[in-house]
Image (cartoon, rainbow, N blue to C red; front, side):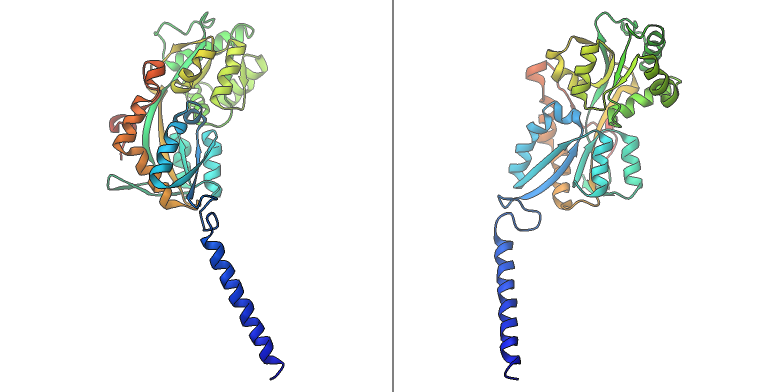
Length: 313
């Protein structure tokens, strides 16, 4: 017994010391779960390059952080990559713009429902703008003038590019982003097999190029090549001062571009992700979105949520 008692006392002291150490660590700013060096919570967001490159998230980030005492950590990716980060739990919430990929993400049980206006839903739409087809002012494929649908414009680009790939080129993001998804949908609606006719034959013929990069970089390459490309209007306006490209087609129902926010089931801060969802649809934030870009460009880069255009809730 004499040998055992000191051992028991020593063990108790070790346990007490460890308990005290854990208590101290938890109370140190940045050591609590979900915290950072300032003691704030963190929220990890994966967002599209179009929302980031335009400066919209820079505009909203500080307001959100101050309102909720949180460190918003943003990574800009194409929609496909953003959703991939959401699947693995590397981010808590995604803000993307590809309804087909969003539906697959939700169907795969990677989302949590958010509450908005008393409704519970996995996908909350909060802004929109339009895709546009831009290209050189000389318009070698002759798609300008407002007489063509987006599908007809793509047909004309393909036909003219196949005839003269030196004069007519199309630059694609080629990155599985929302913009790339929209481009592929237009090619399909125009009657093409994207993989065989466009990505395959178009690349072989030399008129179709892929960057594998974001919208800003793709616009820069298209400008260097004096090529056509599909872009969201907001990013084009933000980069327009550095480009020689012009808008050639901006009408047609297939060019609608709706942005959604989805809470990730495997994320680590669903409560704060809900706060971000509420924030984006708050009337005062919607008003800020409506005015974003107006002083610089004369009209907004994005439009606030409209139930008739974006859908409910």
